[in-house]
Length: 317
Image (cartoon, rainbow, N blue to C red; front, side, top):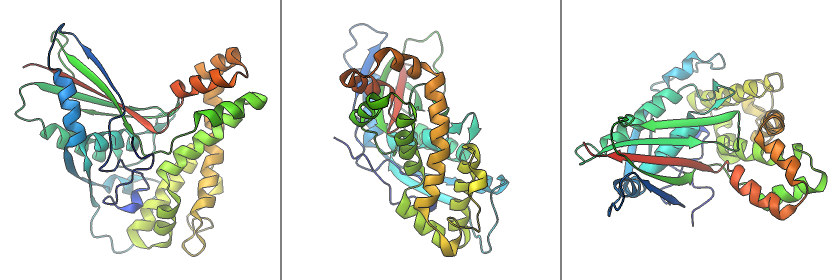
């Protein structure tokens, strides 16, 4: 079992991200090896090490200053931040931080964070008796316009025999109930009924209400980071006219994170609905119809905003 809302209390709350907690557990291994009869799968062992090893990752937010939505507050001393947690968790987090919406970056300092995670995690395997390459992929649903990737190490040479193992880690987004999706769609077969709960999960992951509210009420850098995140997300989902830094629900004296989140959910729901209609899911649902059991099984395979797929490749020097 694993918590659906594992949260790191170490990372500054203004990042507006749910992290994978120190109790993150792998919920699935799928082994594949190019060497028949291999008794000990190096990739398997490395994946276990990723889940068991705790790392501290330092990174900076300076790229935030290049955002059109950022306003420099008084009294900024440092843009340095640190996150602490399982190596597998930081890789999963890097994929989420590195997400794009229709190919445009959501978090301005994602490169710094992803590079720092890659360097820190790769450092854990220096001196090992095999090479390691790790990929992390976050796809909230099939054919999603919002997606994130992260990598550690270098691609294995095409001439080498590799071992591989894939594990699923938490993205920090709340899970969407497959049975609820099935029931909602079966009732009137409208894609909008699927888009809203998926959008709410994603927004809640990036903007947890209590933490976001606290950041909006603060001053200086804490508030500047949070409002920048809100305004950037609003722009990407076509809701930029609905949120202003100095007006409710983002205004410091009249801040309401839950209302700001609702604005983002409205915009993101439209984007997701378009994805579902134009992608494979829409075609598949036309064939499935209103069979709730089949729908539930289908959504279990195609909708997973709470999961990040991490694949570990290893090969001998």
